[in-house]
Length: 341
Image (cartoon, rainbow, N blue to C red; front, side, top):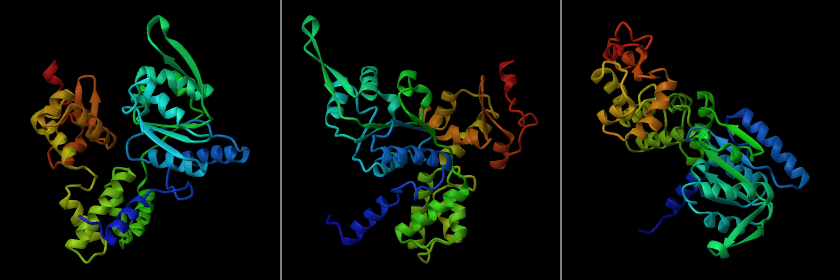
């Protein structure tokens, strides 16, 4: 299939949704001001920026900020990830290809293999690696000097990072979920980049259902644009936004099909709990890790589910949201404990 001019423009617009500078980046005010200070100081000294670690849930802008670090430092960005680097030799090859001042972005850095971590310690601190040549008694360690560079790490599970690796980052930042007002600003900017007319009411509606996450907000924006293009007038107004979100099963709290399936199983099959995570996952036909990492964090944050030593428990708000009558003991999350008495 041959790409048309409109296809090229569309791909260009999609890539343009990422902010290119800290001035364009919306939200995360504390992190943004701290990062700006560090980068400006490094530029004024004509020095390489300290190593940077971003942590937080998926979709909040860790990769975007890594790109911005490279842009602000006027450096080349090299991208890799923890799962992709399984051997120390792989990391040595990446490090030896870096030029002075390059930014190396390592996504999911907590998933680096142990030998790779140990090599990275030395590279980050002393800008050198020891390459082992040969095996057994005849093996020789050859030190290899590296140009000064900046590592930008991103992780969704900061607790899995070993302390020696975490301590080698000169700047660490945790990204929080976004307020609806900030998401509205992001949606207005993204809509303009996509050439899609979006009114304020529609932007507010999408923002309120985006789970505090810019990635989800931009994804829902594209679905609203699709609906407006096919079934509406081509304009993103409130009726179009509500209709599109209904089609894609995103309710007024931002819960999707999986979230509601988990809540409904918890309330109707297990009497509100407590129930084990693996049992809950089997009941909705999903992997345990999917329920734990995709659905559960949002449900807990919204006060619809509680995690207890005995298992997952639905709160009274969960019953009410599903249109069900909550048990008398649902408010304090103790319903179902009689199963274990």
